[in-house]
Image (tube, rainbow, N blue to C red; front, side, top):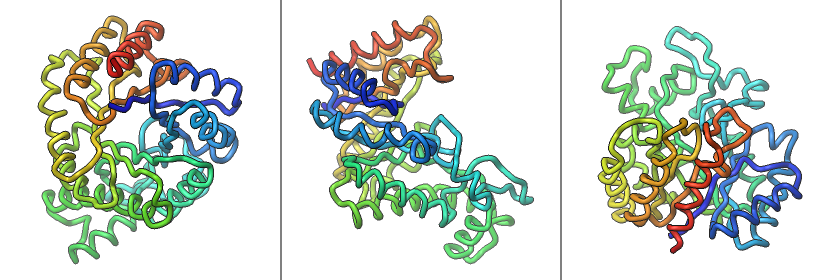
Length: 313
């Protein structure tokens, strides 16, 4: 089982080296850099230095575009949307929304440009982070619906809109994964789909250019019995096995409330028992120093480290 952590990184390689050395002692095989758009614009040392430092310590560097278009993951502060207001989502009546639309050709072109940059810097994987159906009626969405169905998205039946939104997710994954394999075939294509998007898991697994698929069952702050995650993990495992995909799972170590830290261990041990191909922790050092950190950073991260060690034992 491969193990790894997501990492918000640092633009100063001296600090990055310290963190990578800790990951090495924990037996991590992968580090998944959560790169914001602003890192490409102003703090690009974070992106440039990581591949060499990670490789020097036997760790594979993977890129996640965190908060891309104010849409994927946290850290939402999109420079691209500031410069391209026409790429924002729109409501049915044309009302402005603060998040971007991944169906917009300009937005997709921007993702491709960023992928070209990480490929140049030496990243070995690109992670499509939690694409999910959106409620958007921008020109790009309306045009795509018309192309696929011949109808009007704004007057379509609810079930037709739902099917369209799901198809948009797989279309986006297929577009990005296909671009990577046609231009940077050495880069592993990875995608995480949330528990709430189980209906899309099978369709995503059918995408030929997608190498790696998984989910993130982030239950640390609820009271659901952790054993109830087992069927979800096994479902994803069966889908990946049938479609010959690498199977990964995520374990939560962010925003964990005080008193819930034991659930990191409880969920982690179920994941270890189920043996996905890769087990990842979000995030390194309990995401300390951010608005998504854990209430008790030391305990949460200690428990996550325990799981990383048990996964390698």
